[in-house]
Amino acid sequence: MARQTPLRAIRGMHDLLPDQSARWQQLEDRARAVLERYGYQEMRTPLVEQSELFKRSIGEVTDIVEKEMYSFEDRGGDQLSLRPEGTASCVRAAIEHGLLEQPRRIWYRGPMFRRERPQRGRYRQFHQIGVEVFGLGGPDIDLEVILLTHRLWQALGLGDLRLEINSLGDSAERADYREQLVAYLRAHEDRLDDDSRRRLETNPLRVLDSKNPDLQALLASAPSLHAALGRDSRAHFEALCAGLERAGIAYEINPRLVRGLDYYNRTVFEWITDALGAQGTVCAGGRYDGLVEQLGGRATPAVGFALGLERLLELSDSAPPASIDAYLIAVGEQASAAAMPIAERIRDALPALRLICHCGGGSFKSQFKRADRSGARVALVLGDDELAQGRIGIKPLRAPQDDRTQASTDQAKAEQTSVALDALAEQLPRFL
Ligand code: ATP
Ligand code: MG
View 1: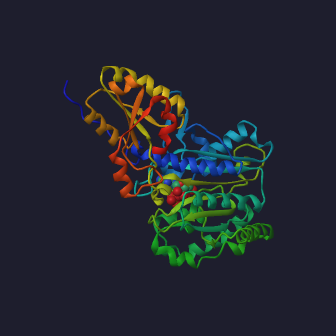
View 2 (view 1 turned 90 degrees about the vertical axis):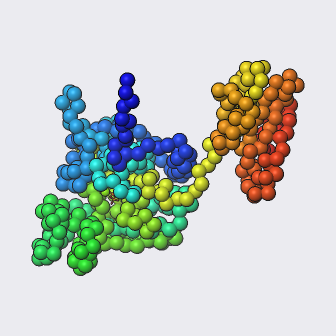
View 3 (view 1 turned 90 degrees about the horizontal axis):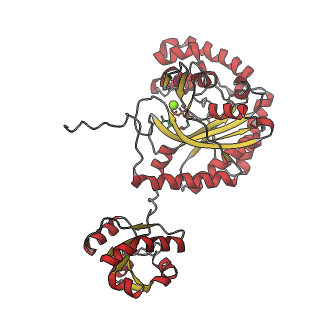
């Protein structure tokens, strides 16, 4: 049969290749450790939901629902969508399983799907870690989730992220403000672009979110949302600001920060970097006190955020951690036959050791080449003679992890040590 043309992955959706996975795992492990330290519990929900869920929560007139969702009718005629974000599913699950009787701190991770124009930092399948807290309405929990994200940046070694915050007020205040804003924008309609003109009708607050540089001057002089805030919203916001100051977290109030999703009220925040060009927001969140009720649950205050893992990874320059410690090679009839069981004994004795047992035979030279390419720190060397004496060779391929000077690498490469097989578990760690 003629060789077929190979198929390719879908545009904007990427394979995570074996030599990239260590960095992803490191990021996820560090994030998880921080989340657990604050008492957050992981929840996993399906990647597919009824389209209706996202229409009702994110909003019918948002970019996501209007043009970015992967929606389809399944064979039973149900209208389904790949999830474009995690909050709607979390709220749906929390209502469905009665999790809202008491305050809940929940986190999730996984792929999200939006049919956007792919570019640096913007993909059609991307990955988020997110947090949702249910049942707490005060500014203290807003402060906690921001402190948590701040600790996360520390754990990931990210320095130069800037925090922007804003308050959107409650729905009555927003409605008031909406009228003022519409009046202002109508008066300058000739200066708006097509997108903004359309949003003026459907979702005017989103005009403030426009990235069009020609609109920035106009928007800078738009009426301020802050002036429209009532006493309670203002007090909530001021308490958050005071908390951030007490905690020593620098922030900037951005009165035009409105967020792309409809469901936010009061606190909204973003962590932004200047290092990634236009796709500078690595983490975004806020309060959404009305959403649980909007999705059919009992009114429950809620606050959360989501961060984009691709953008975070692009920001951090941490070297990928080594994925393998030792590579067992064996030459000779008896040694080859004994290699696999000996590898098992070594794994029994050293549970943390990551050991590859060579497969496929070949000369010492070719096996050493494989061992070196695997990235292992040491080769374990088994020949018939060693086996007969109950011994095994340890050949350093790289300097031990905490001593990586060139001199030590050269020296380390030079010698092969022979140890009794029974003493390997004891001897090996000092070579790693
Ligand atoms: P943006 O303004 O960059 O489009 P957004 O407001 O649509 O972001 P959210 O829906 O709040 O973003 O998602 C939270 C985070 O998820 C973003 O700050 C970003 O880090 C990441 N993110 C969102 N969309 C994408 C995407 N298409 N590709 C990669 N990461 C994304
Ligand atoms: Mg977006």
